[in-house]
Length: 169
Image 1 (tube, rainbow, N blue to C red):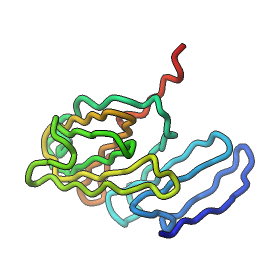
Image 2 (cartoon, helix red, strand yellow):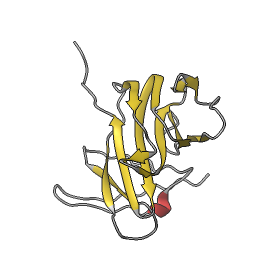
Image 3 (cartoon, rainbow, N blue to C red):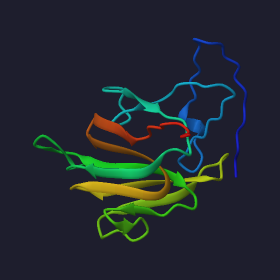
Image 4 (tube, rainbow, N blue to C red):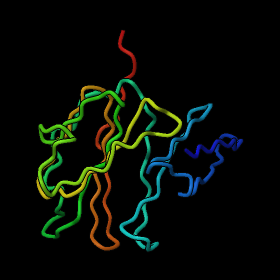
């Protein structure tokens, strides 16, 4: 198992780019000593056309529950797109997609994972593709869910569940 640790000292207002060659098991775990904003570059292909940024939230034990409905994940207007979801969940969580266990999806739905997160063994990730209709996802523990779809260089990606309300008294 390759684990890469390196320190990059930066000051307030500065930034650092971490290239894609640091991914392990299709994951990139970043740990910081202070709060930072993290963004991931996205696009529908290897082309530099239509690139965007995707805000990556911090992990938090307050993120529980699910996403009740992603409607028509494979369509935007009258155009068909290839769609899927990415999930970050606690290693011991039960995850359900459309009320079925993530390990027991119907034909045509492809589940990649669980992939362990190198550097933080409390989490695992999944990439699930093959959807063409509505999608709902729930978990018995923390859940971070993003959906994506693409058609050529056109790409759409949304982070749907990450809001943390902080500790409750």
